[in-house]
Image (cartoon, rainbow, N blue to C red; front, side):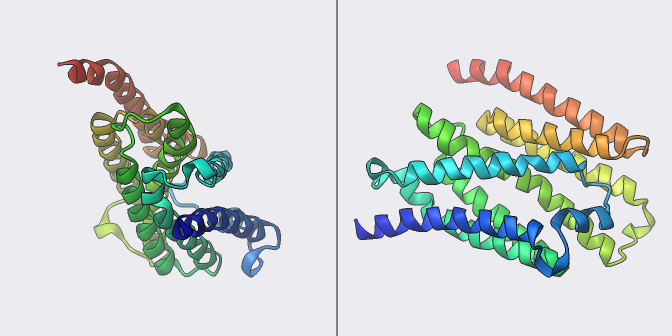
Length: 254
């Protein structure tokens, strides 16, 4: 029981730590630069418009609600919450490390930490069995939904970090235009979205992809083929979502 209490407190502290570092990074800021100013300076084709990053507010709100919910006495022995607690604490340490590395412009380390973070979030996603587990409304809205949004956004951020790392290191793309490589990365993210849709029926996860693709389109209006590819990608994910809503329930009834 003492271990459960320590875990619950650790989760709350991890969330507070993430919020604190995020605020410090953009107000003080770390190494004299804000997160947004670095992104604007580097400006990769996979980067969405600045407004799209407001999703972090939604993510932190969701994670705060999860932290409060899991800290309730009644949830101390909740097996699902118990199984993800320490993983979540690890994710908090990882995103904090990423923030520091990013501000110090240590892009190799930002890429490594981002891969670690997405791996941790996949483990959490699997342990919660999101999209398959018959969870209670509270678990769906206070636990499943925040992690669906978080994983969806970090999935996109991983690709953005790959593009950033290659750009700052002068990768020539085997002579292929960086815009074409960006379109290829969009295609890969669509495949990931499609696989998740049909395996999990996680519409919240899919919605994050639509949000990100629209953000990329807004950022690169007039930049062909990035603008067109982002619009098409958003449309494809919407179609996947509709198909998932129609087809998957029928398959489940068979």
